[in-house]
Image (cartoon, rainbow, N blue to C red; front, side, top):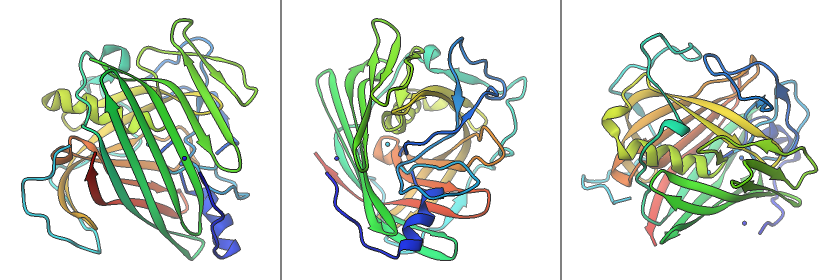
Length: 323
């Protein structure tokens, strides 16, 4: 993904560093040694906070990074102001799994149905320290045979230009990343050495042990949808999905909870969606929400990152080009 300088108010550029994106969406990570509630990390694996590709800024909260089917058969009504109508009530954010709540790990997933190749566009908006930010982002998803490639870019007023790239294999279990790279001023990457079970980083960091089904920040967005698309009935509200996710500097274990179905009015039209929330790992962790659209083969049509102080960055689907 190439870059160009983005002009905007200096204050806004610095301020957006506290909110913008694994996809999404960078390089300085704070480590939390505490395990994810209800999830035991394997030996040698550290659990980290979520980070997204944005311009850095000094802040007390950890830096975050923005972000990784078929055309709907129903009529598309355009709306400049998205609204949300929940059809299934969400569970309490941050609550651990109950004794009866099903939890699916990547190792336990038996099937996946990946979305066809497409080019997704997003309108980006947000507000930080009383400064509005706006821009555009795009996700280019392509695959042929047993290979896939995904690319995510963002730019705009108050948004530093960032890019992410993921490439690897496709299997019956979904995406198997081989290399992930993120570029801001320079590129950093992680290589997935599946034969030796290691993630090797270009940023002079120790290699990390890989779990079965490990993803990177970008492939994660597509793998979540591929797993749910294969067995929608097996993922009711309250279900937890655990995936190890690699950045360019370490491996992370992320836990997502399926909140329920919602209807969204997005810039690209009305869509029925399924909302997922990544559970925070610490007090200052931002909340990451992802909306997947069944009519678009469960690709992400909205992504929202919200800081504890209230700042937020919102990626909303504005259109799709078939490849």
